[in-house]
Image (tube, rainbow, N blue to C red; front, side):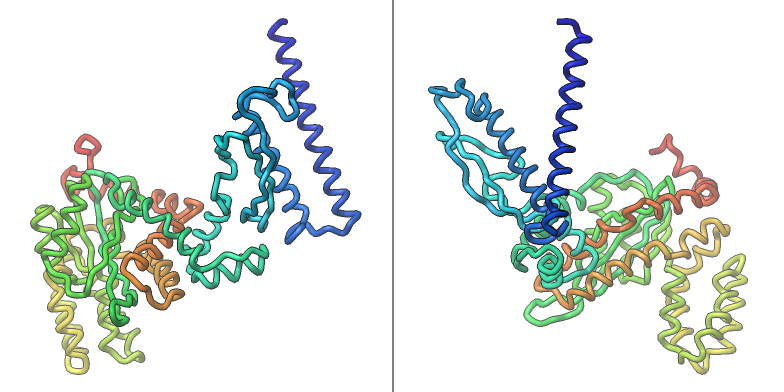
Length: 427
């Protein structure tokens, strides 16, 4: 038989299968229409189609396992044969579906499409993880599945599903990093954890700006609120052990002991106080009706062309507001040493390190997920929730593309200011 003949027969067979499938679907749709059957829900058309697809796949699997088709005389005295079926209900993304799973005499058949002891198809697990990442509690997810799909899924089962991400979280937390990053942002989110009693605990997020201009979350760490140089030395040493040898600038919000730890791990890194956080903390000491005036008065300080001009503008601010809000003056004076490095760079670099839009949007997503839970029984539960929220960020990739498009000018500025430490040859 020629190759062309085989190809024609194969094509004809494929067309026949496609036609048969289309006819089957058409028959089911027509039956559903005539009998008033619903598309979704218990006994609906989609459930029946899912049942047929799963049972057909299972039949194909046992045929491959035994080596002969159902009712084929070849299987007689073959040493193993079919041994009926057993009913099993699996939860799918169209609701619970009862399928007949074939068995063999030897009990050696291991189905793959619906594995032994498997009660949920992958789509359901993905749905639960997606809903959890969006901030729904386990009780809300259970109610959602019951209302939309008529499926009873306990809160314990949902917890078991979300626990599956812990292995992926461990792998993510230990993944290799780039050799150099232009900027690291370190920020904290407070979560309530029940450890004997419910108390606020900080979870620290470290986000990097990559050499390509994208944003990348490098990891999350839980603290107890009393972190010092030893704690931060452990965090930064972990990042260095994952391959991060150089950081040009690290932006944070006056975290105690952090500058000393940075100097130990990355001696050439400039530690910069987050200007946005500095402004926000200033407003805490001022009456709301003065916020706009204070913001306007402080703008000449952080937009000054150099440190000398900034000190002069701050002196003017102190004369105008020092008596009414001495705490604001003390705040800026305490942060001045970590604030002034910002002033020695041009506008391109200032834009990158001053704008915290990226990390603020990350924190907003985390806070939404955290608030929905109220409090967590353990530190691990809090980290799992935050990890799920992080994994759901920017699903379309538009945010990443937007940052990349703005990166060329800052990249050139970083290359010049930091004497080529970002060059590919050094990476």
